[in-house]
Image (cartoon, rainbow, N blue to C red; front, side):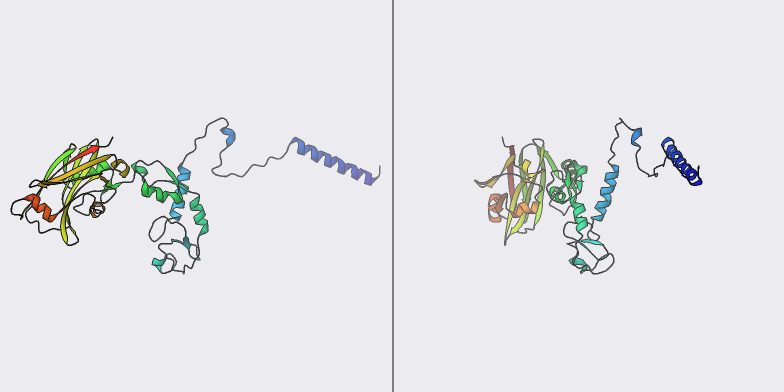
Length: 316
């Protein structure tokens, strides 16, 4: 056998041996270790609970990005950004004189379309979740929902001061009783007397607020004096401690009189969602001109003595 033939045979045998080794003992390459990867082989057939915590964390981070650095409110399109990528809501842009509040660079008219698209993909809980709302809403629909959410807190209905307390109805009832010392009555009928020694001195002030409990609900009776143009008048009206839709299930009547005459008003109580000033300025109640009030009072017309009676009932 020639030398070249022997070399070819040696090469073929070496190649065959290499292929045989590859088939019998292949090299095992370990995958890279990556934190957070779950070994599915250990959980085959098992139920793996999905924890909401990672999603909450991501949503919180995104919500921070969507917070305007000036007003701290959520940003809605158009969302502006400077050349360095700092964002700003459209309402605050004129307030900062077209200068980025973060880096002081000129803002121009650059929109952050990426952040607007991210916001459009979000679904967030109502901010009144702690008051009982369990809804989840798209980012761009959330604001509208919250403006009408039935669980949003009520403002204190006391009109004698600029009270800023808000809360649900049970909380406000306790607040009116304990902090404003408002008279509380049970029953659907009432009879109140209002007396003022000098009725010619009329100021825009509430004289009386009384809370009535009936039909498992609470109602606020207001009586006050205010100027209607140049003429002082008195007005009495009822407000319902709840939403407007539920207020329409009730009606009430008010009556005032004297010297053989009387005036009667019948209406639907307004929700305390409407401020006391809004109700008063819409004249939605029993309005008594001062001359008529003094006539009802009798005597020398130097002292106001009005007796207002009323009744609340539930419509069938």
